Each structure stands twice: as C-alpha cells, then as structure tokens.
Image (cartoon, rainbow, N blue to C red; front, side):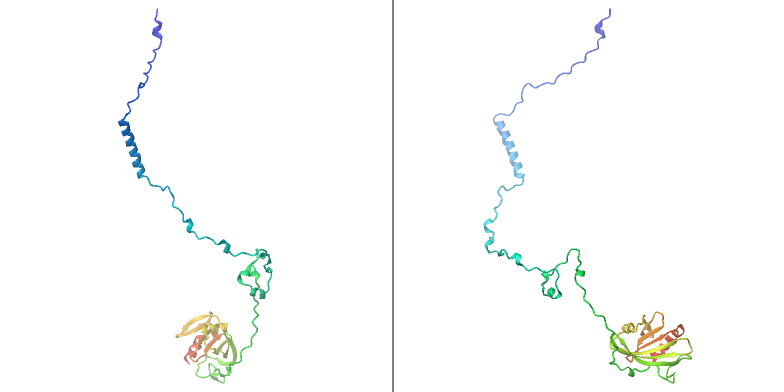
Length: 268
C-alpha cells in the first residue's frame, strides 16, 4: 500500500522575524550630557551671529517739529454769495467778447467746431483800380529806329517792315509802367512784336514776366539772362539802359526769326 504522506506538497519555510532590541542604547549622563547640550548651544549662537540683524525698535518720527497748519487763517468764503455770480449769456456780441478776459470766454458746445463758431472776417473785393497816370510814356524811345517803315542801323529779315507802333501804360506789381510797342510784318505769315518796357525800380525779370503773363524760365543767351517761353515764341531780358526788351511771334515762321532779331538788339 502506498504512503499518502509522500504525495503532499512541501510546505515552504517561514522567514525569520527581524530581531527587536530589548533595551535602549546608552545615552550620555551627567557631565557628558551637559557637554553635549553646551556644544549644541554654541552652534546655535554661532549661526545666529551670522544672520542679518533686524532692528527691533523703529526710529521715532520728529512729530513735534512738523509745522502746524493755521486753520483759522484760511480765507473764508461768504455763505450765500456763490449763487449771485453773473451769468454769461450763450451768445455774446463782438464788443462783449472783446471786453471779456481770456479765461471767461464761452466754450464750444458738444459737436460744435470752434472754427465754425466764429464768423470769418469779410474781406472786401478788390475794385477795378484805374491804371496810374503818374508816368509819362511819351519819353520811352522805340527799340528800332525807322524812317518811312524802313529800319535804321538794323537789318530786318527779308521782306519785313516796321508797321504799327504806339506807347501805352501798363501795371507791373501794382505800379505804373510804360511800354512802347513796334510790329514787324511782311514777307512771312504772321508778325513779330518788339516792346521796350520801362519798369518800376526793383522789379525782377521773373516778376516782370509774371506781370506780363509770360510763362517760361531763365536761359543764358550770349551771357545775358533771358526769360524764354516754353514754345520759344517769346524772349524777355533787361538791357543796359534800364529798360526791358521783349520780342514775341505769333506764327512758327516768325518764331524762328526771334533769336536773330534778339542778337541784333543786344548788340545795340
């Protein structure tokens, strides 16, 4: 017969329990304990000496030296008189506005522009002033001397003669001036106008051109500052006799003659 005990599994071994001390370690007693306490106390004091010192008592404020405010000497506002101030009307006349100080001028209402609140001053229109008659244009000499429509000491282009001529008054920079005009015509379509202009003093060539409604810019012709139109149909310059000379053409054929005529006039 088989043994039943041989078929049972083996029981695992129980681990050993940790050992528990049965007594406390030996602590210092007597003088040894006192020495340990003294050593710890010295370490605490050494650490405390290295820490930043914080003052326990705050400095006292100089309360007794502050100036006293004289409350009884402040100006007193009389009661009941604030409601009696004069009221500024919403609309003031120009005379009333002129008498008000700057701080009392009425302010604009919400959405109202300050520029619109004041009416712009009315500027009277410039009247049509008559041309001044204080100048004598009869003494302005002609540019080209002529006799019986033929030029003297001047070579006119082939077929051209001196036609109409006249002196008249003009206005330059709101001042009176004189202009003597001569017309050269014949041989070509169109004509050439030659003007001698006696201008007021201190009028520049650009101002003179503006007064004559002559567009253009400066060019140098034989060393002389000359005002020339963009279309090259007009030239203007100051002569050495205190006059300005202008030549203009009204046709491309006559415009081509202007540089030659101008050269002769500068040489005179």
